[in-house]
Image (cartoon, rainbow, N blue to C red; front, top):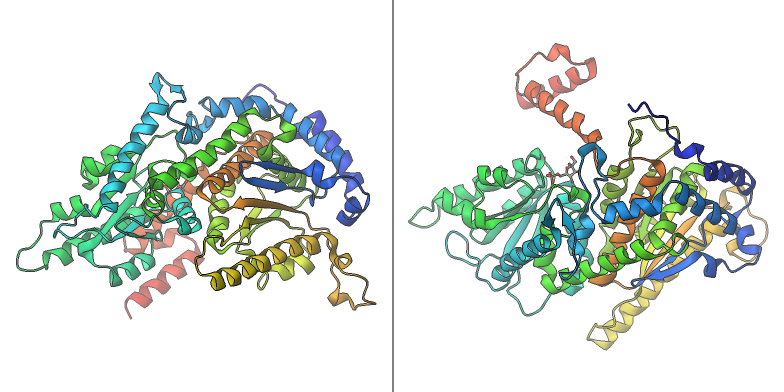
Length: 560
Ligand code: F6P
């Protein structure tokens, strides 16, 4: 705990102004804000790196934004952005930088960290990854029995799974045609259910596992890896007349990706099949480097580099734009306004493009693992709210699931609508193209309609006479709309970087560290102890009444 008394965010002058301002604005319905004339679109929208941001449907006015920008200044956002991008030790509790932006710097950029040329190191690791990708795409990577690899299973969890899974799915239209095709799969859950499914249908001779773990200690990933190794060794030993050595199997069927080479070696990953990265890349910020191997395997290195270039464009904008025009800052301020001044604690992510199916799950980790904190960077308890509860689903499907709550429930919820403007231009068959383009228009109509109904409520339609209460819509739910010119590697890169920076700006204003995750540690420790109890090691009576009965129920089932 620091002895120096500091100004907490809620004591800053702009915070006080915003409080008073919110009292005045709270009673004003969104439809009134639009009805009062004014150029809301002009004032509240931006276009950067192929992404259009529309925050005009937030429950704010021009004065609000001015006060929020003052708050960002008073909280030191401009200096914090510089500190982040230049490699200062912004991850204070772990005393290291958070330099994921360095992973997307172009080769001719320069950045030094502790005397090391970071850009050169980053591009050297990309080159190593490219060699492995090229071998697989050329059909030259052979399994222990000599057959070319056809399936790659990524074993990882959290940041070593969600980012690559989300991006490979989003960019499925960008698979190169002229390569030896490898199918990429993902298994993350410690219970083994995803892995068991793959093991039941993949051919061990032609399957390669990528063991992705920054720490290389994550039990979820290592338990999947051990199961996969035994499956391969067992199956390939039975293969033909000459059994295959376990060592050869591990060598030819495992790639390791980690910031811990010693642990990869201990596990048995051949040094030449190890891809490394650095402690200064946070797990949930790591898809831009070697953890992105599955992405490069699906879309090829050119598209992977385009993803990096898109993110870099957003980084450059973030670094250089004035706060007023700065897209990540605006997105962050909309969230601060909702959480801290309008008391809106729920935030839904709603993409209107099936390729973004995993985007909400990815953002759940990015936002909630980063900013789900209640202690400041100086070790004091916060006296204000931080990260809202964030969840989501493909918008069109959510319309048939939880939109009821958005429209008529009791919770205020802020929503992000996300969609590409253009789609399906490259579908060859003219009839199918016309149908699919019509479906794209349908999706966009729904996307635009939903944010309008959430805003206006009953006023979204011409007055059609009196209606009973249960058919009424109160509206006034704020939303942001994000439109991509098209969904491409470049615009996706920019979109992800936009959210990363949004999270950072909010953390600066809340005075919390978005780059650690101490809140996940205790659960891991207690799970280890509980595992021992389940295995009859230790004294079950020392646990609580509920847990004891749950364990006994498990023992009873096991003995049945
Ligand atoms: O337990 C949380 C966490 O550390 C995440 O931050 C991380 O993305 C995930 O686990 C996986 O960690 P690793 O890549 O070290 O296996």
